[in-house]
Length: 524
Image 1 (tube, one colour):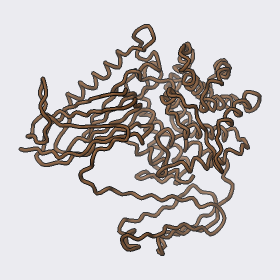
Image 2 (tube, one colour):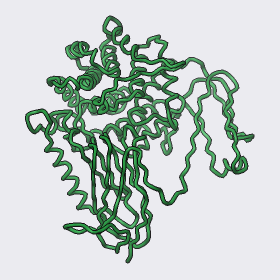
Image 3 (cartoon, helix red, strand yellow):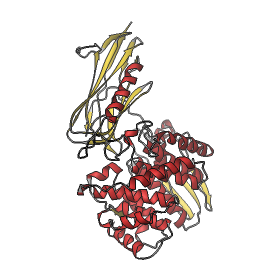
Image 4 (cartoon, helix red, strand yellow):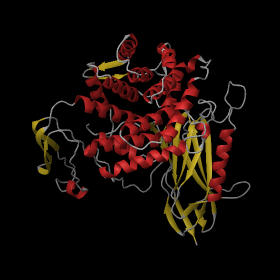
């Protein structure tokens, strides 16, 4: 349970909102609401979490398309994905188990969509088989857990087990457990294969997942696969000695108190909460004291099992008052009594920097402002008059393909986005995606026909206009040069510093880039 609140906080505060991210946020809140105050989330009263979860679950229904499958964005049915659909059905299943109101008709339409998807012919390209078996195993898992018989698909997929990634083996294992097949040669074989993929390192252990580029479309990572395997082993109530070693590795691999992306945090939280419920043994009975330097800042008693957490906030002046500038003060936690003291510390700060330089950590970005003209272009400028139309152009120079990209460009104070531009651009993107074809097939596909066709076009496929920012999303950006432009209008006189535009891979957030800041003047 150490620091799981930080992972939950990350999911709740994550700034983007595709269906996967909203589903992961709902899963975090489901777990947090069920466990009470063990998750202390900024701005979230535990008593208000259930209504927030219910609202998010209802909002997710907008992402369902006429086929029954779910798309990444509401109404963008070219992006319907069986794997995404299976993931959201998993979230809905957890919610239903915890007594939330979940539309049964919506779930049944999604289950039927997965059954139709499972009936499609397998790929002829051998390279697709790990990805193909991955989404099929997940679909079968959620169907069986949803009460739908899948014996024929289970038997068929079990025959493909040599070509599965480790997390797909875990999904298949979950499906067998759900149909009450908790022992026997098939279960033992799957556990043996998962065990062979677990790499021990001193007192910890993790899953070394199959390295396959197509699996990245399913948000694949070692952390995520380790969490999925841990969860299925906990479900099976095995005495596998690797379980505690996996938990130790999961906690040690965090950075900044959390895991790398929304999928990793959601799956890590689910598996660790399930582990906590089943295996915590020592009943707490102790007092805990926290000191900063010689000053005691907190003292609490813990008696018996509880999900309540205790927290203390210190202002920066209080921290600085404990010692002279340039000196260090220890922050110490001590426990007197039986049980384990779990704790986490978090420092929040803002960098006092006015003129940030650009940064390339996988995305080389440039941004320019130029007077808008109907035909042609004018040189970039930083001075405009109120009422002027200004074209903002973002340029990306990529040395390799990037996937699941999010770009946020803050609109400078004194400007506002032009609504007619936004509506036209959004329609253009949707139209272009609907006209996609699936390379290697016999021509254009129906917009929800193929789960693998919608991402093969490399470009921005979703755009959002907000009062203070424009956000762009691309399932895939191919190597090379990409440009995106939008129109703003100068409205308020003054001198304004622009915040940097930022791009990142949502599931590899350490791959990012930003532009430098600019000073813009608007005259009356």
